[in-house]
Image (tube, rainbow, N blue to C red; front, top):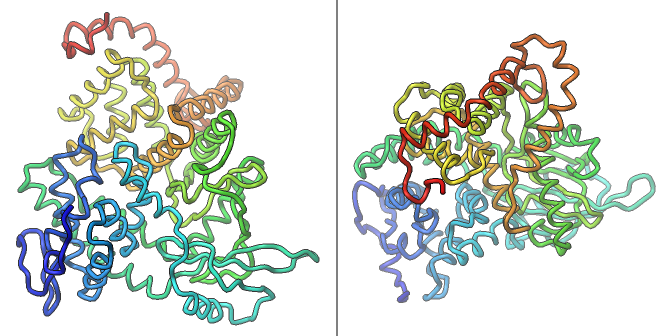
Length: 518
């Protein structure tokens, strides 16, 4: 890449495409050269190539609508990089300067469909060495902890993330010296969030208009981004995280494999005080292959299977499962950090997912369509849904694709990229959290099927609840596997129909040559 000059990166009054830029009075414009130099297109794999122009234009809209002083800071950071800095380095530098985009980088950091060098740079965003000056951090701590708590605060930070700095401290409890950390919001982070969230509110409308002009499917960008905007605000509301941590610690209290940090008495709306975790990211842990596989199984069975197969009407999941929040502790446990983002999945939605699984196992397209309709606003007889279901079942019948959760969520993603499905925001987050966790596990152990521990946990629950099912009403779904006795009887009867459905698919829906059975 040739060196970039100040004129090329951005100059006052430079005019770019009017449909994808916003100009500020007396401010600066973000030049196309900058957006090209940071390699935005690499954030989408080749399978999503048609959406790359929309991503670039959407990013230009987002950056161009930030206050002028924020744009100047972004350009100054880019100019400070070595002239021949490659695209992944420039992109990571940009994401760090925008806390809402920083979160996007963390989510994508382990996605194996992205170039290796880009993933390497994005993984640095998961947990960064501290660069924020300590003076304002310590000043905020002393302002927040006005009651002069009996702690000794370190003068250097441990790490920092998108919105906060982690500062260690020691205190005495029961006559012993113990270690804790303060999670302290960065100075000015609330204002940055307000500025960015305001732009996110307008971005959905822009993407819908721009998507139409690019000939892309008419997706509900406004609703999706509005959901993301609401969730992101929890990042700076530490009281929300503190409530989530207390609930999570109680939920996992009887599982010795998992550790949720204990909150300490000195929490405030801008500071979270908790016990210090000693360990490393699960992806960096030096463990035997067998131990890493066991840890991967623990990740799925505790963070997904336990809440998914619970009898609760609303199950809570950690919604930010990137590697920076998952630690292998020195005493052999899994520590789960940063509970600011959680999602709640209703029992009915979990039941619909199980119905889609059963539909895949029995090649029952009608069951799948009804379950998908219950998850969103699309009708069960919608032609787009019917075609998408048939393609998903072809992958089961002709490619030998196992119809587990990966298959279900790949199918729902394909549907979401085809039409406005209207999935509820917590369900959208569940898809994101499953894929994030799968990517982390892939970096830990390579080829691994997260479906196995999740489905085995479901099978174990099903066997345990069999005596109770003997006395349940046929339509009752009060059990932990979410399906009624009537549902199970229908699924059992469908087993005998599988050969006929397979043969009908071979005759009536010609498969691509490479999919045909031998």
